[in-house]
Image (cartoon, rainbow, N blue to C red; front, side):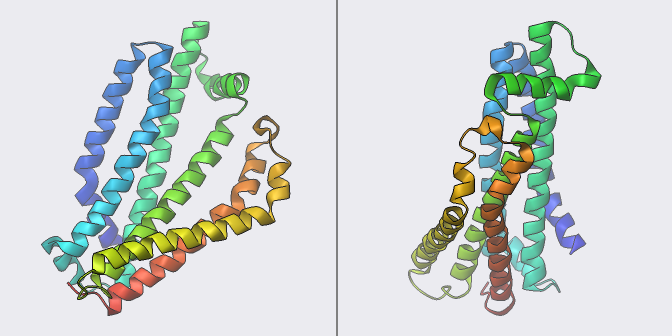
Length: 256
């Protein structure tokens, strides 16, 4: 499986390098625009990066299913479970890497904003200063940001796995059916509806606790994690189940 992971990142390293260099150059440019430029980068960067991330992860799997490179991959002595799990592991590692990089950008831009407002920065107190800045402006701290971004990553990976499953169904069960692509799209919609429904049921069960934390300024980062845990757990369980289903289809039903 390690070799499969290495293969995934070998295919991605150019895109990852270009993205990181472009982000760094853009951030340096926006720093010259003052606090407004730095704040704009912190708001827009995760949105743009998320779109690129999801698009790249889905496109890579689609290419493996539909192009000659995929034929060579599936002809290797690896089970379908290993292949799909390596792709999911690569997506998780890439996503965690994105969170780490964004955290570094928060530190850099936070230090810059603090310097612009105070004209000095104590390197040893940067994180405390950023927490103070966030608490004073919008009532949160870095812990809240991390929990929120972690939850978003879990939900995005859940969405990606759902797409993987729909694509795998199209290439296996519906490979010989005229409207297989349309049917797999219907299944994709159905899966998302079902998962949304289950998450909603979990939400309704714990809604009294949610309602007791209407004001986010009264919620600590650990409390926020506890509040979001049910829907995060549903998304993780969903990802595991759908990954196993995709692995089975790749192992037994794939039609290249």
